[in-house]
Length: 204
Ligand SMILES: O=C(O)CCC(=O)C(=O)O
Image: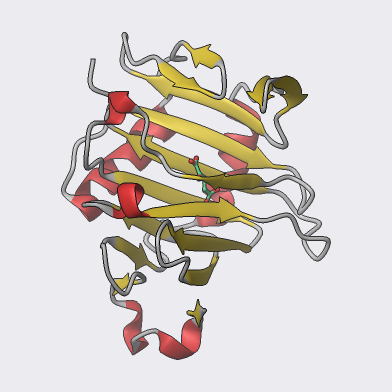
């Protein structure tokens, strides 16, 4: 198992590739300025929803709150549900533009997730829905509580772990969604909320 933490990171906070092969997941530490203010604004302005999703044939509560925003026509289907996009807010457009500048890719939608405490989580999955295309670029903003993010290779089972802090941006691209799965595991150590925004380009 490979464990990446700040010991392995280059000094000065320059972008850092997390994956050893079948790339690419690059972390941009502190790419969002004033993350505390951004988090506070999104806590109040995003229409957070508790949903039920289908897991192994049963309907269960999603272990987090979420909200899907995007251009008209950007439907998102996962775990037995189809989300129609909420409109963009000024804050979300500003964050989208930062992600487009950081990644060099365009985005037409964003999934916002609110992890209320460490009890909320995201299980192992890849963002490999057909509407994202074969090699999607996904930019992921973290705000609020620091949470562990794990990546596991589908074949070799090699695992990469990283702590995502407030203001960090992760850019996942190339074959990474085909070759690697990711999760945000449950933890009893975190009591504060975290927001994650994954900007995506849905093929309409
Ligand atoms: O919260 C995170 O950092 C990851 C979110 C995620 O995996 C997703 O939205 O697909």
